[in-house]
Structures are given as structure tokens and as C-alpha cells.
Amino acid sequence: MSDIQPRPSAEVGLLLDDLKTLIDQARQQVAVAVNAGLTFLYWQVGQRILKDLLLEKERAAYGEEIVATLSRQLMQRYGKGFTKSALNRMVQFAEVFPDPQIVATLSQQLSWSHFLLLLPLDKPMQRDFYAEMCRIERWSVRTLSARIDSMLYERTALSRQPDELIQHELKALREADRITPALVFRDPYFLDFLGLDDRYIERDVEDAIMRELEQFLLELGAGFSFIARQKRIPVGGEDYFLDLLFFHRGLKRLIAIELKMGDFKPADKGQMELYLRWLDKHERQSGEDAPLGLILCAGKNREAVELLELEKSGIHIAEYLTALPPREVLERKLHEAVASARARLVQRPGDEESEA
Image 1 (cartoon, rainbow, N blue to C red):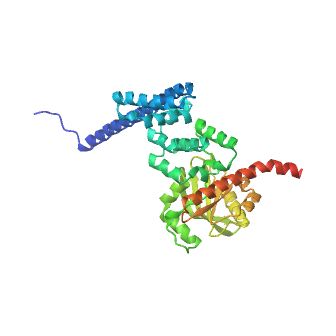
Image 2: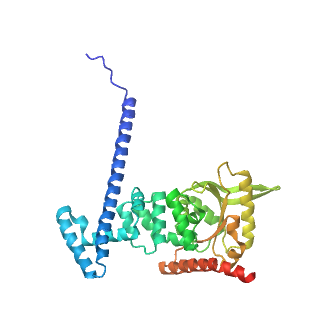
Image 3: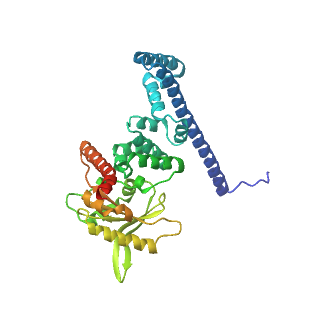
């Protein structure tokens, strides 16, 4: 008889777990490498065809003819992945993403399916925003599609800035993974998942958010962690209560959130400033930046918000929608808000000169 004793089942189980981890990691690495290789190949194919087409740019018919011919030849050898429409998408890919280094970096996280969702976006900065946020936050294809459908870019504070500032922030995001408040905060926030009827009070909204905290965190965006509800703020013998307190890992800041049933009022600013200063003094940890405030309200007077210069106090105002309007109405309102914000930014220097 052999003197070798069988290993305890616990040891075998531990060994099996280690082997599973090694295999799963290797498979993931292979999948990432294959995806990156295929995506970059599609860019190279598109770039090579584009180069030839640009030489014949005055002969549009020639372009159609050569793509159709290439498609037939490539499909005979490599299969249906090189249809005429697929080749046209590869050419478009090379057109809208001309920098091979950016493509190589993005393809480590984004699949070809991700890029197919980005190609129809006609605004370069809008496209760059979704591409970089997708890379940073590791969105699935489904999540990217949902973010585009919800007009996330148009709802960010970033979209309301001048083009030069947008490009600067996107460059910092691309090169240093630097997240700023303009990338994080939105207006409006969609709270339709709370299931509120036409009649509700402020406490109903707060209760519904706690029931649907996971959905609320998804709407806030990646990086938010819940800390407290009805956070006690003791000041001079009196107790105040902050509705919701979060922490954002990317910003390294506490985020105080107040819910308002009606329209934003100037007095709401003073209340939030009190909370932010208390949090800065008593809750802010070493290595963190100053806390920021988000006031969610049913409506706001844009002129009043502008006059209060809330950004200097680290306060952001946003409307919330408990029922979504038709898409065309939402698009019109968001485009009007973006245009209005940019117009005010352009007018400020002139206003100062006229006052002088």
C-alpha cells in the first residue's frame, strides 16, 4: 500500500481556486489583446483606404467603386467582416479618430462595438467626451448606448463651457485621467425611476432615493459612494440636517446634496454654504479637496443663479425630472440651455468693458 496520504479537500479547493484565477486572468488578457488588435486593424484598413480615396477626392464615383471592389475581394478571402458597409465604417473610423496613439489607448478598453456607437456622433468634443468617459469608467456597450440616449454630454456642466475650455478638460482627462466637477455634475438629473406620482413631498423624494439608491448612484455617475442620510450639522447649539452626503473618489471630495420641492431660492445658497463650511472644518480628511454642494430642485431662475455666482462657493444647481418629457422636447431644452450658458460666458468680458 502507498504511504502517500490524500490532501484534505480544503487544500484541493484552494488549489483549484488559484488555478481558476490564473485561467480566467489569462483568458481576459487574451480577449483584451485580441480586441485591441482587431480594433487597430480596422483603423489601419480604414486609414489606408482613406489615404487612397483622398488622392482621388475629385472622383467620388471612383471611391464607391474601389470600396465595392475591395469588399468583394476581401470577403472572398476573409469572410463577411469586410462588407462594403463595414469598410465604409472603417474609413469613417480613421476620419473621426485620426490619431493612432489615441486609438491604441482607447482600444485597450473600448471594443469595436463601442466605436460603432461613437461614429455617428457629429460633434468632435461630444464624441471625445463619450470615448474618454467610457475608457475611464469602463462602460459596457449597453451603458454607453444608454448614456448617449440620455444626452449625458449635453447635461454636463462641461458642454456649457467655451470650446477652448472643453478641449482643455478633455485633454487633461485623456492624458492624466483628471476628473473635474464639470465632468461630474449634470443638469437635469433624471429621477423617473423613483416612481413618484404627481403629488409628493420632499421626504417622499428622499425616501424613494434610499429605496432606489443603486439607480440613483448610476444617475449620479461613477465614483460616488453613499455616506449618510440626514447628516446632523450642529452649529451654535442648533442642529441642522443635510439631506444626503456622498463622497466622490475621482474628485476626492465630499458631495453634499440638498433636495428642494419647489424652485431654487437665493436663501438655499446660504444654507448650503453653512453645510459646506461645517463639513470642511469637521469632516474633511487629509488629502481631500474642499467639499462641493449639489442642490436638486424642481426649477430655477437662470438669471438669479448666474447673479449669485454659485460656482465660486463650490455649489451646483440642477433640476430633477421625475417624469421624462418627449425626446424632442428634451433635446430642445438642453440645446437652449447650452446656447444660453455659452452666450453669457461670451458676453461677460464685453459687459465688464462697458461698465468700465
